[in-house]
Amino acid sequence: MFRQILMATALTALALPAFADEIEIVDPYMRVSTPMSKSGAAFMQIKNVTDRDDRLVSASSDVAVRVELHTHKDLGGGKMQMAKVEGGFAIPAHGEHDLKRGGDHVMFMGLNHGLNQGVLVRVTLHFEKAGDMTIEIPVDLKRGQGMEMPANADPVTHGQIVHGTMSHGTMTHGEPKLNKTESDM
Image 1 (cartoon, rainbow, N blue to C red):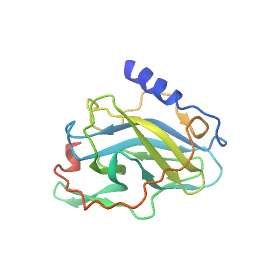
Image 2: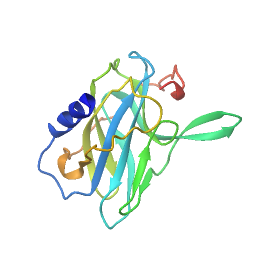
Image 3: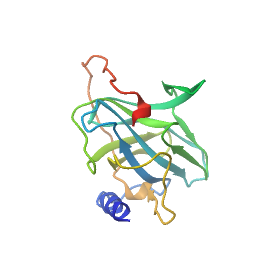
């Protein structure tokens, strides 16, 4: 319960006047396998409350060298492979798309610094029609497997989130090395 209140308080602190309510972000959180990991992943439920289809096309954050939309592919025999998703995730009209462990997620590669429990990570989600939404996602190293959405969790709507764009300029870093498998997160 305390975690829910803390997260709601953090997200409410971002509340500024914005566009019409179009997208709701429910229960966002980020995981890393250890506080000093060089990669991490963010999970959430994305709800489209409009009459038109939309798409999460990308994400950005200054916390990592690269931020990409990823999914896991089942290779059979209990083996999974992580893969970048070209074109993003469809969010149907009056529908939702879950970003969850073992499935679709936002991947952070080449983290610039360690991430400890409770740290807030600023992330901009780029939607095809709804535009940019900047949210702060709490690092939750204690969360168990699967999408854990409390029954009484209030969604954060597009109208409650900071809008704008983030510029990262040209990246000159090499390819980040991933030390852990994503299943460790």
